[in-house]
Length: 474
View 1 (cartoon, rainbow, N blue to C red):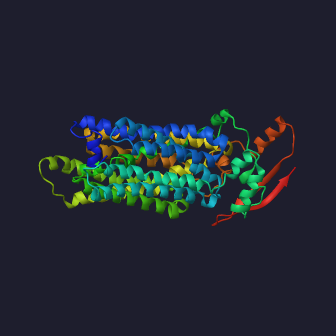
View 2 (view 1 turned 30 degrees about the vertical axis):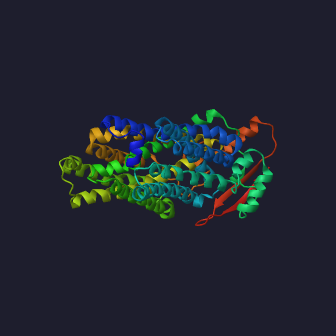
View 3 (view 1 turned 120 degrees about the vertical axis):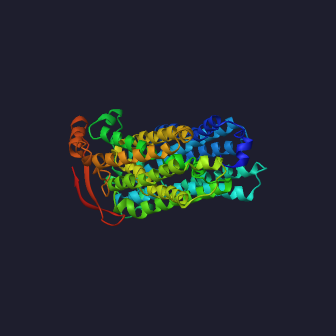
């Protein structure tokens, strides 16, 4: 939306600020609304046809939306429809991919692998920022090509995802759930030679029951996940991610190319933050400490930005013809980058890892669907209200989110337990769920006895391999 050609062709020029805020909010937030419904609808599909095929279908839905956006030709309703359809695909992928990773990886590297997924996500966003800058510098604003190229580039990652999934296996948990033991055997032969065929990682799962959501040890995890996803958005990251050129304008940055250039470095800062998270912080510092440190340290840049805008009022200075920038202004820009780095090194990755690993095995996908939809719901709320907040509150916008981050740090200190290094099965004990043994006894008492195999496993320290400690059969 920062490109002059886009503003011209989609009627964003010659309007008052309130109309511009409304149009920008509609264009941006429609995508998040699609993501919300995509995350919810993906659950029954992934449970029925599997994780692999669900990801492939989601990528095709995204491609349909990207094609509509590219071919919208200045028609705002077509653009918004395309963003909503693309959001359906992205929402589904944001749910299924972390679950796919969790179900195909050992606990010792599970957080790091989910972090790599987030690195790729941030790298895609960073690439989008720089593509906008490149087309603004190299393609004339007098042609539609300037905004068509950034929209058309979306087709490339969607196509790669679809084709790449053709080479990936279905998760062993889903294969076990469907009693597809031959496919499970092929999975271990090809991808997990270190594991025996009988393993708790692929043991047959109980039949799903909706009432499981409200049982002791489950409802507290769902509540924790919902609050985490809400807090992730209330850090204020999306006010910069979705409206970064406008944010830099409030700091006194002028010119479309300059604002896009500054935005590109914001993308680099976020990507570097995700790399630090994935390669070091997630398994060294842990989930709980990362959230606490990220909240308190990440609030500092927000407080400075708000204080600078309050003191210098760069927007009013620009209207008065004063385009000079002091060292304090450049420091405010650095704080934007520092904030993006801290956020991605902590709250961005940790929330997704946490919500992909804490839920009970038999209903994990449903629980992740609920928390993922919650994430997109709050993303929609923030993206829809941000233009009005920037216009009405000014410096208060940054101070508002800075204060919220302090409250999040206090909440994480008292209410978020550490899950680093714990197996998916050990989460049951951590969150106070009934023991697996007592549940198994109930099943044996209520059902026709057919025998049972109990497997105890242990993650080998500092490696991505498992080993069997003992097997008890009856």
